[in-house]
Length: 198
Length: 198
DNA sequence: ACCCGACTATGACAGCGGTCATAGTAGCCC
DNA sequence: GGGCTACTATGACCGCTGTCATAGTCGGGT
Image (tube, rainbow over all chains, first blue to last red):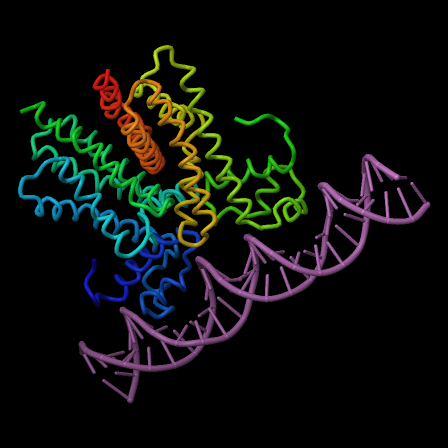
């Protein structure tokens, strides 16, 4: 995922994202984040004077940028890029994790949305930005593959919605079934959006 | 939603579901649930000797059954039932709520999954059961419409995944865009599953 | 030597969480 | 009335949370 030893600040943001992924925002303590990052507790108020909300926002931010960057990697892994292939790759990242590391973690952006959408306006905005920073590259990739621009954005939203929902179901069921199902059913529809225009 | 004045026990379960929907599981206090239900605090340990976990599980359970029952109502509202029409109706329940009541609440099952999947085994199981009790009726409705049985389950999973994900995005963005997009893009695919077999 | 900024180290505080303990009330059956 | 069950009413406890306050260390500049 991330490099081994960045600065303590970055490590704390990363640790926050990891813990939020697992337990949700409310159940993740500041002290716990510091401990997990191997960072001194005193650094919390130094690097994050805005308190927990700032830390959470940066973690969500980080996650959104990470997801956006991953899209480029997925594209590179496909020798014949197709929308369905990209989606399959996005799903595979999760099935791989769940099969090798267990179902401990979900999507940190989803967790932030569930826990903070109504209680912390800035975190809600950070989650929206994270979704946007993820949908954007996906939509751009689709247009590159020949999907008409006006549909690319819609399909990107559909892909991420289906993926997020399937992550939820998979985690509840402790089974990747929902993920593989969604990839299988959505693939043809996505690929059809290319040939329609070609 | 629910009748006006059921027993205090049921009211507490219902209130728990409402509060979990809004703030997540961890941020929802027992005292808060009792107050919201207009129930005495002492009744908590009387009706829910299993503590918060039991209360949360019953709330999730209730939500799952509620969602399952809604499917029948949606079908009744359609004079010509089609998969796409059913999905549009499922989505419309959320767009209606968000447009009239604001984006305060999400899906309680999603919230329970995010907050408890790793920390409370019984709640995770309750969430899985809730998803199953929701997917089942949807799949059954699809087969009734002429969708081949082996695809009905898959498509039901896809529908609920996409809906859950779109709920997340809509709440983060405070915009029903994701919901309407998903309904529009998925409708044709769902309807095609009928004509293929007919 | 002096200072200053960046960072670390603790300790305390006030609040809230779920839960336990204990006592009280209301109704009903015998 | 006695006794039983269902339910209600409080108060206390302990652990944990985020945050603040204060003091400390360390490294460079000059």
